[in-house]
Length: 199
Image (cartoon, rainbow, N blue to C red; front, side, top):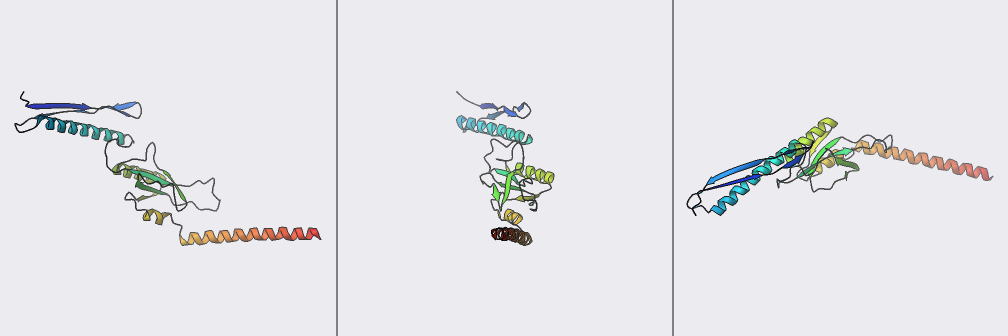
């Protein structure tokens, strides 16, 4: 049998939010030359069609704020500082508002005493870099936060932004000294009252 053409068709259905889906498909045809191996050409066509459909699914997922599914590229997460204003001392200042891009495999829930939470919903993990950057920019704009890109895994920029300033450290130390002195004074007063009561 003399094969002169090979045609392949590939398609997939991917669920999206709001009860919708996307159904990309692709049909490719190749003309076989006399020195071509039909099995190799067919395998190449299948791979090309599959890769193209998967790229379309990844784009549709990201357009719907979901992480890409097929691209094997490095993945990232977007996190932000979190401040629990209800369970903090009243005199404690609000920490800097920061949105940060980090490698996905990095487990970082707290840095320099600042709690970090995922910045976006529905998804802010396993993102391709471009998607992570778009989400980080949107989150930073909405929160009035600074954006720090630590996608390379280098945390020095984040550490510098979260480290308390020398003035803040000095103020916190002075506040603690004043609280300690007040406690000591109150304790001394209680001891004096107890001693007077004994006489």
